Image (cartoon, rainbow, N blue to C red; front, side):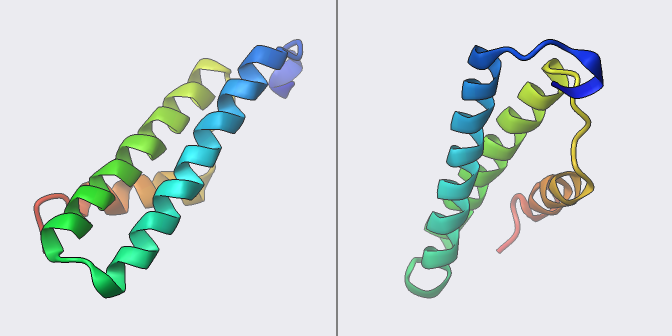
Length: 84
């Protein structure tokens, strides 16, 4: 694993599950952009932010740096909180 850490199958599985949740949250938000009310879109954006934060926390716990794209996406959705 990263930085000389030993491979931990449980950690890898946990990261995979969290990444799947990020992908699912992104897909739900994308489909809602065209057919959901604003309040529902805001809830879906928050769900995506929660999934991204959980994944980022798990990466940090594993000693893996957060990819720049994910950091930017987290910053974007934090900035959109409370906006329409």
